[in-house]
Image (spheres, rainbow, N blue to C red):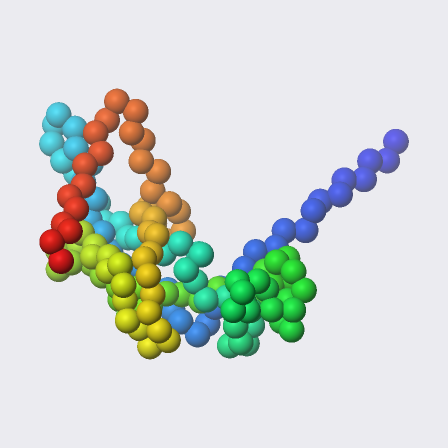
Length: 148
């Protein structure tokens, strides 16, 4: 008996080369009854806010659909297009504070290519892994300053 296994082709966006990805640092503390341990992490911008391009040409139309001149569908764009890094402070208004124990998120950022509204960030646990907070029977605390 001969078994043939079909393995589906896996496609993913290619990393861009026009804007480097430099994650803003964030100091995280994990505390127990014995005290707190600090570790350096970082934040990363959601891919929804990233520029997807092919050779420097935008892959999206103004109607938020794939431009058929560059991609016939999402799978084709994933194969031939690239996702650029983020200009965290200039475009998205995301900066680490001086001690790296916090980040500033500007809701409206006036950038080179127009205004940007909002951002969605994830906490990283290394260069390519999200930090998974295990919150069962634990407390999660953060300070939010809305004075500005």
